[in-house]
Length: 327
Ligand SMILES: Nc1ncnc2c1ncn2[C@@H]1O[C@H](COP(=O)(O)OP(=O)(O)OP(=O)(O)O)[C@@H](O)[C@H]1O
Image (cartoon, rainbow, N blue to C red; front, side, top):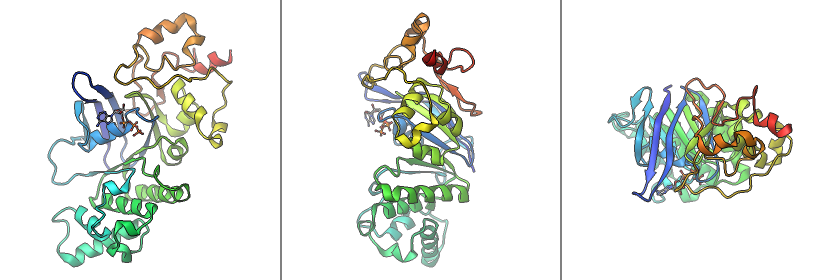
């Protein structure tokens, strides 16, 4: 389908005393691929996603789908977003059939029979019985509601899909079902997808590529298995280290200093490398720590999805954090 590209996107909230929630982010979702965007709460993941669908105030940069700026008025929007809470996209007083029908672009279908058939097709696509069309959202379980939200997004025949923490509010028992469904729909329809989660296991399950976000910036990018098996940014290492134990065998590093500082205030991002106040690597390399405090490392880039990290010590062959922590 179509490539989704964020080009140097910045989003600022508030006026002079506001904060820059997304700071010059460039990120490409290749056509038909899944990019997993991971980072802790407040890093700016949702703000970046919402910028693509016009829900957060873009102060610089642009978002392109298939090379076309999304702000260019389209006849229909070929980009759709699914949110954490399906209630945000489903009217509780409308039957789920009506909610889905409402999202079918005007003029795409003629007459009630065709619309009904399309609603049934969409419900089947998300593994729901078309008989459910008459039900209200309140009559469904959380997982079923999220499937309806997905069907509603698919009603717009999108070329790209943004999924923002779509399983976080669900019971663990149904998370897997919804993830399987999302993956099979993405493959079947060849959708480009930006999949946002703070859960690394979920990210690993779905993603072809991974982008790690910290304090409004992308700090590491690359093919999913490379980033998750051999992280180069100390922040990614800390994220993996804090992940549930099933995840840890992927990541065997010598125990290092624990980054226990509070997340920094986005109103006042630190100078130099934004991660330096929490970073376990900088203090180990005293001679070079100066650069961490004063020089802003170049952002990780995604155009060709090579494995890159925004860290002064990220080159594995020379002075990698891994080498340093074990020496
Ligand atoms: N509407 C808003 N007005 C002001 N500040 C906001 C607004 N929305 C988000 N922020 C701030 O922007 C920063 C990024 O928030 P965002 O929700 O994008 O992060 P996130 O990584 O998606 O976190 P989470 O996983 O908790 O949603 C945070 O500091 C947040 O407090």
